Amino acid sequence: MLALVWLIDILVILVKILGGRMEVNPVLRLGLWLAFLSLLAAGFAILGLLLVLLDHWLTTLA
Image: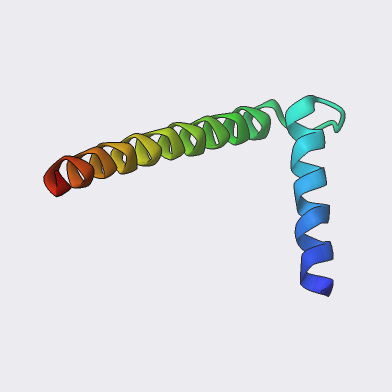
């Protein structure tokens, strides 16, 4: 349970940094934005791959 609290605290700190409410080095903020956008792009790519695999699987059933 305590680990969940720590994860939420880290998430809140990251949101504050990305939102500009916490004063940090601009390079750190840029790096966090790039990491976030990369994770978002990877998530969309995985979702697209799963949709293609689902379509392939459903067409082979018919």
